[in-house]
Image 1 (cartoon, rainbow, N blue to C red):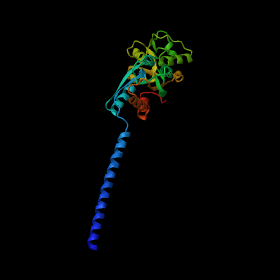
Image 2 (cartoon, one colour; image 1 turned 90 degrees about the vertical axis):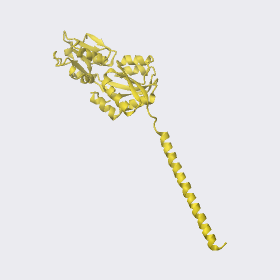
Image 3 (cartoon, one colour; image 1 turned 90 degrees about the horizontal axis):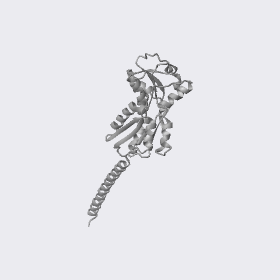
Image 4 (tube, one colour; image 1 turned 180 degrees about the vertical axis):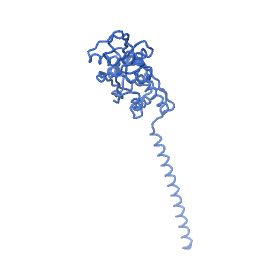
Length: 272
């Protein structure tokens, strides 16, 4: 074989080897790329689905309903089911075995009913606070201007039951003012007390500022300084019996987020 032919053969072999290396490199790069994508896909958060059952204080009804709708919008395939009521009743239901994923109470005392039974996961977090206000008939025909005015003879006043956070706060304000008030009725939650005024079955009720705001022109609000001594902190917690824990955690995160706090403060709640 001549030197010229041998040289040509060597150049052909070298070219074939380079082409093979390039092919292997491309395959390796493709494999790495697909592996990376798979790794990223594997580490992605699981898609939320199913129902989140939230037990929440009656005063949270309007703002939590808004947040529930937003949650469902952000997580297609989920549904937020609410049970609103007096915090003490809700706590008793939870410790009695009622199925729920999240509990949002209107006071640490009512949340303690649940934590004392070890029915909550971790430490409940305060997400808002709320202050009392007097709700009167539109136009305030009885000229109620202070907490003391509620003790006027002939005035029909409604309070929340003392076991309910709004009732306990009202009693605290009355005690601080050394005032005695005998209401025409005690209601099981703050919405029940407010409804009595809206239906003109009572002249006034001690409720939360948020409830007065939510009622619009159906009532008129009267602030009183003693309410500053009876501000309620609202804690929220994931429940141990949660059937949809991941979605429940996400809902709690929304409540605590800047977006959730905006909805709550616009409803009249105070920051934590």
